[in-house]
Image (spheres, rainbow, N blue to C red):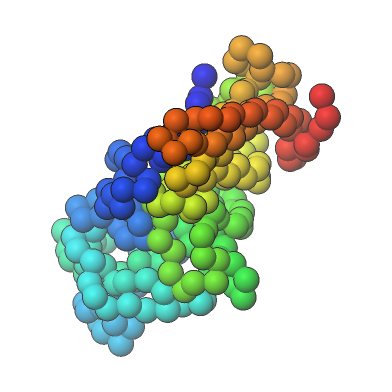
Length: 285
């Protein structure tokens, strides 16, 4: 069973001002790409510069999905489409086959990505998740399915964010394959997890669906914690015990703490979402 009671972990560590996420194997933590991480280009036809400036020499132009290595985060920032990020020094294999270093703006890198043969042709596709823009009221993320440098499908969605109007994005982000999970006809579910380990910050997932041709929006699930209590959730999929045909059951647990930090009150609710081939529709059970 896929249990996402991240909130239980958050209750123990969240309010201790920890500087490192408990989630492993990340390339993007608290709004910054980690040093020596291998990441993919989210932007398409991206110019790699000689210095962290749009006025500097272009060393190469690379397509979406190109893999690079983050060497360091510079102090230089740039804002595009309302979103502000640092420039990064990277290394990459140039078109002439030689290893080269250069600079790229962080908004052109994918905070999380997945690689898999999604159409069973023995060639891997990439699922790239990146920050698209900061609108007037909230930021917009986009997921792009890329194959051999070409974008096959894309979908724009709202992330989980504690400060939607900020120019920065400060969460840790991770993508995970959940697989088919018993849905018919077969689909593949992708979980995008958003975590910020601090009291009262919303955390949770955005679930996306690959139907074989297109990437579709699934749902958003939220949880949070503070010194008074918590809210956490669990998915129950069709292929699991107590699962429902073509449905995701969301079991939400809410708890309150006493003065010693023990749970004094706890309650559970169930919500049911039916997959109709295009979207998850909330239904009564």
